[in-house]
Length: 287
Image 1: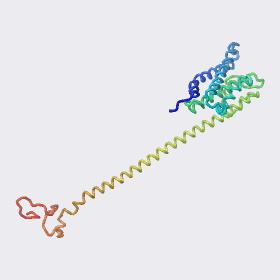
Image 2: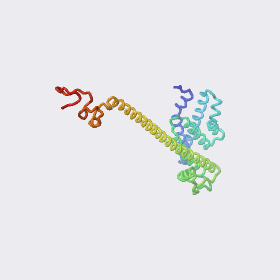
Image 3: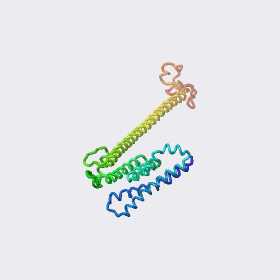
Image 4: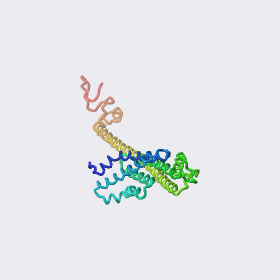
């Protein structure tokens, strides 16, 4: 069995701590939006938590880069991780930290072999809907012509946008809100395609498995039929070999009547040349 590399061991050990960091980021991001009247220390603590979580994911990227045996290949194959790490440094906006954290969490979740595709898709749907709702609420709440004023409206808008239904009762009016809408639409289409493909692959694999079982049963029945035919032929051969020496040795009344036994009177079923009963001096018959 191949021993895991140092990078693989690090990724396995850091999976749960990074997941807990992502949960902390979700709480820190949601509190100032859901409770906008919170005191300043609360807002400051949430902001520090967001940056700390981003720093944890950035440190994870740097550690994996240092442990990688081929660093150029690592950078080339993990370019999305690099963009997610650099993105918040371009302009310190909270929305950029949300995007980068979502990207980093998604990339690390894909690396975990114990996380199944269905679980990943469900988590992505919940995460995108939650962060999309909070982001659009923070952008549209104070917009002069905005109609997304509370968390319920934001969640409803996020759900209808991700499912590409778009009732139109709530819609963003700011430029950043429309950018969020485009991102949710594309994400919803992509996730819907993943779910559809996963369901189709499940049905195909199920049909292939049933077909393999049916073919195996058919082959077993064919083999059993051949064995039965061979067994019947062997039984017929053994029966013919056993009956061969006795064939024609029994003289019946019909053969005697036809003179086939030399006219010697004998009872039906008595063999030719069999000894007479005791005290009878005649041969080949009885009184």
